[in-house]
View (spheres, helix red, strand yellow):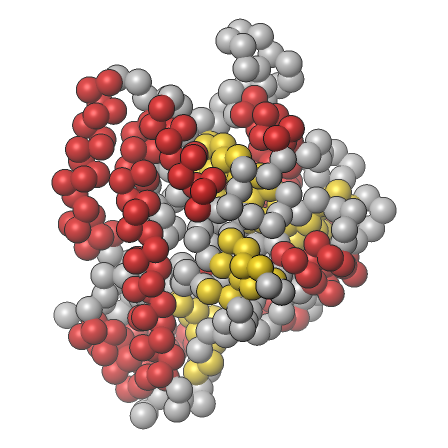
Length: 370
Ligand SMILES: *Cc1c(COP(=O)(O)O)cnc(C)c1O
Protein backbone atom coordinates (compact mmCIF):
# COMPACT_ATOMS: atom_id res chain seq x y z
CA UNK A 1 0.00 0.00 0.00
CA UNK A 2 1.66 3.21 1.11
CA UNK A 3 0.63 6.83 0.61
CA UNK A 4 2.61 9.41 -1.35
CA UNK A 5 3.13 12.90 0.08
CA UNK A 6 1.63 14.30 -3.14
CA UNK A 7 0.11 12.43 -6.08
CA UNK A 8 -0.20 14.79 -9.04
CA UNK A 9 -1.34 11.94 -11.29
CA UNK A 10 -4.45 11.44 -9.17
CA UNK A 11 -5.48 15.04 -9.81
CA UNK A 12 -4.56 14.98 -13.49
CA UNK A 13 -6.75 11.92 -14.01
CA UNK A 14 -9.83 13.93 -12.91
CA UNK A 15 -9.26 16.83 -15.35
CA UNK A 16 -7.27 15.28 -18.18
CA UNK A 17 -9.70 15.92 -21.02
CA UNK A 18 -10.21 19.62 -20.19
CA UNK A 19 -6.53 20.32 -19.67
CA UNK A 20 -5.37 18.48 -22.78
CA UNK A 21 -8.00 20.25 -24.91
CA UNK A 22 -6.89 23.63 -23.53
CA UNK A 23 -3.24 22.81 -24.25
CA UNK A 24 -4.03 21.65 -27.77
CA UNK A 25 -5.78 24.96 -28.55
CA UNK A 26 -2.52 26.74 -27.74
CA UNK A 27 -0.51 24.22 -29.76
CA UNK A 28 -2.78 24.73 -32.77
CA UNK A 29 -2.55 28.53 -32.38
CA UNK A 30 1.27 28.40 -32.21
CA UNK A 31 1.29 31.54 -30.02
CA UNK A 32 3.25 30.47 -26.96
CA UNK A 33 4.39 33.55 -25.03
CA UNK A 34 1.96 35.85 -23.15
CA UNK A 35 -1.08 36.65 -25.35
CA UNK A 36 -4.77 35.99 -24.77
CA UNK A 37 -4.44 32.81 -22.63
CA UNK A 38 -2.19 34.72 -20.21
CA UNK A 39 -4.45 37.79 -20.16
CA UNK A 40 -7.46 35.59 -19.42
CA UNK A 41 -5.65 33.94 -16.51
CA UNK A 42 -4.51 37.35 -15.23
CA UNK A 43 -8.13 38.56 -15.17
CA UNK A 44 -9.24 35.41 -13.32
CA UNK A 45 -6.46 35.58 -10.71
CA UNK A 46 -7.06 39.31 -10.17
CA UNK A 47 -10.71 38.52 -9.49
CA UNK A 48 -9.87 35.63 -7.16
CA UNK A 49 -7.48 37.88 -5.22
CA UNK A 50 -9.71 40.98 -5.04
CA UNK A 51 -6.89 42.74 -6.86
CA UNK A 52 -7.18 45.41 -9.56
CA UNK A 53 -4.19 44.10 -11.53
CA UNK A 54 -2.50 40.76 -12.10
CA UNK A 55 0.71 40.27 -14.07
CA UNK A 56 1.85 36.79 -15.12
CA UNK A 57 5.55 35.95 -14.94
CA UNK A 58 7.89 32.98 -15.21
CA UNK A 59 7.74 31.67 -11.62
CA UNK A 60 7.12 32.64 -8.01
CA UNK A 61 10.77 33.50 -7.38
CA UNK A 62 10.79 35.98 -10.27
CA UNK A 63 7.49 37.39 -8.99
CA UNK A 64 9.33 38.39 -5.79
CA UNK A 65 12.32 39.74 -7.69
CA UNK A 66 10.13 41.78 -10.05
CA UNK A 67 8.16 43.11 -7.06
CA UNK A 68 11.38 44.28 -5.37
CA UNK A 69 12.60 45.91 -8.58
CA UNK A 70 9.25 47.62 -9.16
CA UNK A 71 9.63 49.18 -5.71
CA UNK A 72 13.18 50.33 -6.64
CA UNK A 73 14.72 48.18 -3.92
CA UNK A 74 18.36 47.26 -4.45
CA UNK A 75 21.90 47.89 -3.28
CA UNK A 76 22.13 49.45 0.17
CA UNK A 77 18.55 48.56 1.08
CA UNK A 78 17.29 46.11 3.71
CA UNK A 79 14.22 43.93 3.45
CA UNK A 80 12.77 42.25 6.54
CA UNK A 81 11.45 38.71 6.20
CA UNK A 82 11.13 35.38 7.98
CA UNK A 83 13.95 32.83 8.13
CA UNK A 84 11.37 30.00 8.23
CA UNK A 85 10.27 29.90 4.60
CA UNK A 86 11.24 28.43 1.26
CA UNK A 87 14.64 29.70 0.15
CA UNK A 88 13.27 31.83 -2.70
CA UNK A 89 11.90 34.52 -0.38
CA UNK A 90 15.34 35.54 0.83
CA UNK A 91 17.12 34.53 -2.38
CA UNK A 92 15.08 37.12 -4.29
CA UNK A 93 16.07 39.85 -1.81
CA UNK A 94 19.74 38.96 -2.27
CA UNK A 95 19.42 38.83 -6.05
CA UNK A 96 17.76 42.25 -6.09
CA UNK A 97 21.01 43.51 -4.54
CA UNK A 98 19.43 44.17 -1.15
CA UNK A 99 20.17 42.65 2.25
CA UNK A 100 17.82 40.12 3.82
CA UNK A 101 17.13 40.99 7.47
CA UNK A 102 15.43 38.18 9.32
CA UNK A 103 12.87 38.37 12.09
CA UNK A 104 11.48 35.42 14.05
CA UNK A 105 8.14 33.67 13.64
CA UNK A 106 5.05 33.30 15.77
CA UNK A 107 5.38 29.72 17.08
CA UNK A 108 1.62 29.16 16.78
CA UNK A 109 1.29 29.79 13.05
CA UNK A 110 4.93 29.64 11.83
CA UNK A 111 4.31 33.05 10.19
CA UNK A 112 6.40 36.21 10.61
CA UNK A 113 5.74 37.86 13.97
CA UNK A 114 4.62 41.50 13.58
CA UNK A 115 6.49 42.43 16.78
CA UNK A 116 9.71 40.78 15.61
CA UNK A 117 9.38 42.34 12.14
CA UNK A 118 8.89 45.78 13.69
CA UNK A 119 11.93 45.34 15.92
CA UNK A 120 14.08 44.39 12.90
CA UNK A 121 13.37 47.62 11.02
CA UNK A 122 16.25 50.10 10.64
CA UNK A 123 16.69 53.37 8.75
CA UNK A 124 17.72 51.30 5.72
CA UNK A 125 14.60 49.07 5.65
CA UNK A 126 12.64 49.51 2.41
CA UNK A 127 10.07 46.70 2.59
CA UNK A 128 8.78 43.73 4.58
CA UNK A 129 8.03 40.34 3.01
CA UNK A 130 5.61 38.29 5.10
CA UNK A 131 5.05 34.73 3.81
CA UNK A 132 1.69 32.96 4.03
CA UNK A 133 3.29 29.73 5.17
CA UNK A 134 1.67 26.36 4.48
CA UNK A 135 -1.49 28.07 3.14
CA UNK A 136 -2.41 30.35 6.04
CA UNK A 137 -2.33 34.12 5.63
CA UNK A 138 0.32 35.97 7.61
CA UNK A 139 -0.90 38.92 9.72
CA UNK A 140 -0.37 41.35 6.84
CA UNK A 141 -2.87 43.76 8.40
CA UNK A 142 -1.01 43.88 11.71
CA UNK A 143 2.36 44.32 9.98
CA UNK A 144 0.95 47.10 7.77
CA UNK A 145 -0.58 48.81 10.82
CA UNK A 146 2.69 48.61 12.76
CA UNK A 147 4.82 49.81 9.82
CA UNK A 148 2.57 52.11 7.78
CA UNK A 149 5.46 53.76 5.91
CA UNK A 150 6.86 50.51 4.46
CA UNK A 151 5.57 48.64 1.42
CA UNK A 152 4.64 45.00 2.00
CA UNK A 153 5.34 42.24 -0.49
CA UNK A 154 3.19 39.27 0.47
CA UNK A 155 4.79 35.99 -0.60
CA UNK A 156 1.53 34.14 -1.28
CA UNK A 157 3.15 31.26 -3.19
CA UNK A 158 1.48 28.77 -0.83
CA UNK A 159 -1.81 30.54 -0.18
CA UNK A 160 -3.75 31.35 -3.35
CA UNK A 161 -7.44 31.68 -2.41
CA UNK A 162 -6.84 31.66 1.35
CA UNK A 163 -8.67 34.31 3.40
CA UNK A 164 -8.38 36.18 6.68
CA UNK A 165 -10.85 38.28 8.65
CA UNK A 166 -9.68 41.79 9.41
CA UNK A 167 -12.37 43.44 11.51
CA UNK A 168 -15.51 43.36 9.38
CA UNK A 169 -13.61 42.59 6.19
CA UNK A 170 -12.39 39.35 4.68
CA UNK A 171 -9.13 39.74 2.80
CA UNK A 172 -7.73 37.29 0.30
CA UNK A 173 -4.17 36.18 -0.28
CA UNK A 174 -2.27 38.97 -2.03
CA UNK A 175 -5.06 41.53 -1.65
CA UNK A 176 -3.91 43.65 1.28
CA UNK A 177 -0.19 43.96 0.53
CA UNK A 178 1.39 46.55 -1.76
CA UNK A 179 2.28 43.64 -4.03
CA UNK A 180 1.29 39.97 -3.70
CA UNK A 181 3.16 37.15 -5.41
CA UNK A 182 1.98 33.67 -6.43
CA UNK A 183 3.75 30.57 -7.69
CA UNK A 184 2.25 27.94 -9.98
CA UNK A 185 5.00 25.38 -9.28
CA UNK A 186 3.33 21.98 -9.75
CA UNK A 187 3.15 21.24 -6.00
CA UNK A 188 1.28 24.46 -5.14
CA UNK A 189 -2.50 24.30 -4.72
CA UNK A 190 -2.89 25.77 -8.21
CA UNK A 191 -0.01 24.07 -9.99
CA UNK A 192 0.92 24.31 -13.64
CA UNK A 193 2.46 21.63 -15.82
CA UNK A 194 5.80 23.40 -15.44
CA UNK A 195 6.86 26.71 -13.90
CA UNK A 196 4.70 29.82 -13.66
CA UNK A 197 4.06 32.81 -11.44
CA UNK A 198 1.80 35.83 -10.97
CA UNK A 199 1.96 39.21 -9.28
CA UNK A 200 -1.08 41.11 -8.01
CA UNK A 201 -1.42 44.73 -6.93
CA UNK A 202 -4.03 47.44 -6.44
CA UNK A 203 -1.60 50.11 -7.73
CA UNK A 204 -1.82 50.98 -11.42
CA UNK A 205 1.64 52.57 -11.57
CA UNK A 206 3.24 49.45 -10.10
CA UNK A 207 1.23 47.23 -12.46
CA UNK A 208 2.47 49.15 -15.48
CA UNK A 209 6.05 48.96 -14.24
CA UNK A 210 5.76 45.23 -13.57
CA UNK A 211 4.42 44.58 -17.07
CA UNK A 212 7.42 46.40 -18.46
CA UNK A 213 9.98 44.75 -16.18
CA UNK A 214 8.92 41.24 -17.23
CA UNK A 215 9.73 41.99 -20.92
CA UNK A 216 13.22 43.51 -20.64
CA UNK A 217 11.98 46.85 -19.39
CA UNK A 218 10.24 48.11 -22.50
CA UNK A 219 6.64 47.96 -23.67
CA UNK A 220 7.54 48.94 -27.22
CA UNK A 221 9.53 46.20 -28.97
CA UNK A 222 13.27 46.99 -29.14
CA UNK A 223 12.81 50.16 -27.04
CA UNK A 224 13.93 49.84 -23.42
CA UNK A 225 13.10 52.38 -20.74
CA UNK A 226 15.05 50.39 -18.15
CA UNK A 227 16.85 47.06 -17.89
CA UNK A 228 14.31 44.43 -16.94
CA UNK A 229 14.09 40.66 -17.15
CA UNK A 230 12.89 37.90 -19.41
CA UNK A 231 10.17 36.63 -17.09
CA UNK A 232 7.08 35.84 -19.09
CA UNK A 233 4.34 33.34 -18.39
CA UNK A 234 3.86 31.08 -21.37
CA UNK A 235 0.49 30.43 -22.93
CA UNK A 236 0.56 26.65 -22.42
CA UNK A 237 0.94 27.08 -18.67
CA UNK A 238 -1.73 29.78 -18.62
CA UNK A 239 -4.14 27.49 -20.49
CA UNK A 240 -3.51 24.62 -18.05
CA UNK A 241 -3.95 26.91 -15.05
CA UNK A 242 -7.13 28.47 -16.43
CA UNK A 243 -8.59 25.00 -16.96
CA UNK A 244 -7.68 24.02 -13.38
CA UNK A 245 -8.80 27.26 -11.70
CA UNK A 246 -12.55 26.42 -11.47
CA UNK A 247 -11.58 23.42 -9.29
CA UNK A 248 -9.31 25.31 -6.92
CA UNK A 249 -11.94 26.08 -4.30
CA UNK A 250 -13.23 22.50 -4.09
CA UNK A 251 -9.65 21.18 -3.94
CA UNK A 252 -8.83 23.54 -1.09
CA UNK A 253 -12.07 22.50 0.64
CA UNK A 254 -11.04 18.84 0.32
CA UNK A 255 -7.67 19.67 1.87
CA UNK A 256 -9.49 21.35 4.78
CA UNK A 257 -11.63 18.22 5.21
CA UNK A 258 -8.53 16.05 5.26
CA UNK A 259 -6.91 18.38 7.79
CA UNK A 260 -9.96 18.23 10.06
CA UNK A 261 -9.90 14.43 9.82
CA UNK A 262 -6.24 14.31 10.91
CA UNK A 263 -6.85 16.94 13.62
CA UNK A 264 -9.56 14.76 15.19
CA UNK A 265 -7.52 11.56 14.85
CA UNK A 266 -4.44 13.06 16.54
CA UNK A 267 -6.28 15.06 19.21
CA UNK A 268 -5.45 12.59 22.00
CA UNK A 269 -1.74 12.26 21.15
CA UNK A 270 0.36 14.41 23.50
CA UNK A 271 3.40 13.92 21.24
CA UNK A 272 1.73 15.62 18.30
CA UNK A 273 0.71 19.24 17.91
CA UNK A 274 -1.64 19.64 14.97
CA UNK A 275 -1.53 22.83 12.85
CA UNK A 276 -2.91 25.96 14.51
CA UNK A 277 -5.06 28.14 12.31
CA UNK A 278 -5.70 31.61 13.69
CA UNK A 279 -9.38 32.37 14.33
CA UNK A 280 -10.70 34.15 11.23
CA UNK A 281 -8.13 32.58 8.94
CA UNK A 282 -9.17 30.05 6.31
CA UNK A 283 -6.12 28.03 5.26
CA UNK A 284 -5.77 26.28 1.93
CA UNK A 285 -3.39 23.75 3.57
CA UNK A 286 -0.69 23.72 0.94
CA UNK A 287 0.94 21.62 3.67
CA UNK A 288 -0.43 19.90 6.76
CA UNK A 289 2.44 20.50 9.14
CA UNK A 290 2.64 18.96 12.59
CA UNK A 291 5.04 19.50 15.41
CA UNK A 292 6.08 16.01 16.44
CA UNK A 293 8.11 14.62 19.34
CA UNK A 294 11.05 12.50 18.09
CA UNK A 295 10.35 13.91 14.63
CA UNK A 296 13.24 12.25 12.78
CA UNK A 297 12.39 8.81 14.18
CA UNK A 298 8.72 9.32 13.27
CA UNK A 299 9.72 10.25 9.73
CA UNK A 300 11.95 7.17 9.45
CA UNK A 301 9.07 5.00 10.68
CA UNK A 302 6.69 6.54 8.13
CA UNK A 303 9.21 5.88 5.40
CA UNK A 304 9.57 2.20 6.31
CA UNK A 305 5.77 1.92 6.15
CA UNK A 306 5.61 3.61 2.74
CA UNK A 307 4.09 6.91 3.94
CA UNK A 308 5.46 10.04 2.30
CA UNK A 309 6.35 13.00 4.51
CA UNK A 310 8.67 15.95 4.34
CA UNK A 311 10.37 18.51 6.58
CA UNK A 312 9.55 22.05 5.50
CA UNK A 313 12.06 23.48 6.42
CA UNK A 314 15.02 21.71 8.04
CA UNK A 315 17.52 24.63 8.14
CA UNK A 316 16.30 28.19 8.77
CA UNK A 317 17.59 30.64 6.21
CA UNK A 318 19.80 32.63 8.60
CA UNK A 319 21.88 29.44 9.08
CA UNK A 320 22.27 28.64 5.38
CA UNK A 321 25.90 28.68 4.23
CA UNK A 322 25.11 31.19 1.47
CA UNK A 323 23.88 33.69 4.06
CA UNK A 324 26.87 33.38 6.40
CA UNK A 325 27.89 36.85 5.19
CA UNK A 326 24.86 38.27 6.99
CA UNK A 327 26.54 37.37 10.28
CA UNK A 328 23.71 35.58 12.09
CA UNK A 329 24.60 32.84 14.54
CA UNK A 330 22.89 29.79 15.94
CA UNK A 331 20.29 30.94 18.46
CA UNK A 332 19.48 34.20 16.65
CA UNK A 333 15.89 33.10 15.93
CA UNK A 334 14.94 30.48 18.53
CA UNK A 335 11.35 29.91 17.35
CA UNK A 336 12.42 29.28 13.76
CA UNK A 337 15.23 27.01 14.91
CA UNK A 338 12.90 25.06 17.20
CA UNK A 339 10.29 24.70 14.46
CA UNK A 340 12.96 23.35 12.09
CA UNK A 341 13.64 20.47 14.50
CA UNK A 342 9.97 19.63 15.14
CA UNK A 343 7.93 20.08 11.96
CA UNK A 344 6.74 17.29 9.72
CA UNK A 345 4.32 17.59 6.80
CA UNK A 346 1.97 14.70 6.02
CA UNK A 347 0.03 13.87 2.81
CA UNK A 348 -2.90 16.32 2.51
CA UNK A 349 -3.67 16.45 -1.23
CA UNK A 350 -7.37 16.66 -2.15
CA UNK A 351 -7.71 13.27 -3.86
CA UNK A 352 -6.71 11.27 -0.74
CA UNK A 353 -9.27 8.59 0.10
CA UNK A 354 -10.43 8.06 3.67
CA UNK A 355 -8.65 4.71 3.65
CA UNK A 356 -5.38 6.45 2.83
CA UNK A 357 -5.87 9.00 5.62
CA UNK A 358 -6.59 6.12 8.01
CA UNK A 359 -3.41 4.39 6.88
CA UNK A 360 -1.32 7.50 7.62
CA UNK A 361 -3.03 7.94 10.99
CA UNK A 362 -2.51 4.28 11.87
CA UNK A 363 1.23 4.45 11.19
CA UNK A 364 1.65 7.66 13.23
CA UNK A 365 -0.32 6.19 16.16
CA UNK A 366 1.66 2.95 15.94
CA UNK A 367 4.91 4.93 16.25
CA UNK A 368 3.73 6.53 19.48
CA UNK A 369 2.36 3.21 20.79
CA UNK A 370 -1.25 4.44 20.81
C1 LIG B 1 7.22 27.89 -4.08
C2 LIG B 1 7.60 29.10 -3.32
C3 LIG B 1 8.30 30.16 -3.93
C4 LIG B 1 8.90 30.09 -5.29
O1 LIG B 1 8.09 29.77 -6.31
P1 LIG B 1 8.70 29.16 -7.68
O2 LIG B 1 7.55 29.24 -8.61
O3 LIG B 1 9.15 27.77 -7.37
O4 LIG B 1 9.83 30.04 -8.10
C5 LIG B 1 8.53 31.30 -3.18
N1 LIG B 1 8.14 31.38 -1.90
C6 LIG B 1 7.50 30.38 -1.28
C7 LIG B 1 7.07 30.56 0.14
C8 LIG B 1 7.22 29.19 -1.97
O5 LIG B 1 6.59 28.21 -1.33
